[in-house]
Image 1 (cartoon, rainbow, N blue to C red):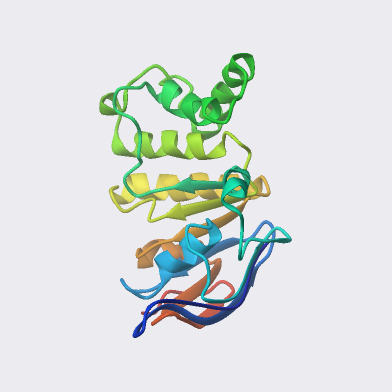
Image 2: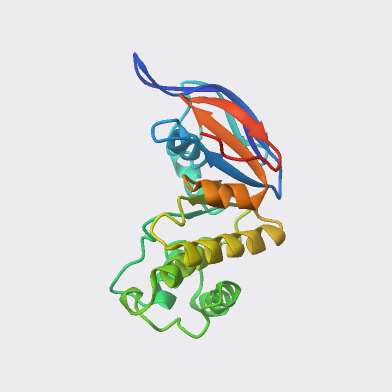
Length: 226
């Protein structure tokens, strides 16, 4: 599903984001990417999303070599990858329904189909009764649930969760992780990028630890030691 083959990303002469990284994430896996600030986690994620290209090596997503992806092919790739951020990135002037619908509108989805898909994804995240509310009218945990709904509208094969619990208290954080596990059970590959040691250690899933641009640990049912 996600394959890195000897990937190096150099930003400047003495600044390396990733150095000779080789790893493979299988379809349907739930993998935590961990490491301290500046370790290379962000570079790793940006490679998956084709926001960055390798200096050396190959990045392959679902059998598609995106190492030198063309600019006009990136939207097609992004529709296969849902992304959740720490700060939700909801438009404050739009309702939760409109926020999620907007992700379909920009890709040219017909209105009738939008009105079928959006309630379905809100039901998955447990917010079907709050679709008409604005972001300011719901809690942080509910805003993140809406953001997850938005990430699911294209039925992505991969869901990248970049510090999705960073702005949430422990109870809401655990609820978001439970939801990600549920989505993973549907067959979606989940890549969780996090600093939260407690969440990683309770998941008991695969953990890839990055330090100074290199994978220093890769464990099934592992823990976050750094």
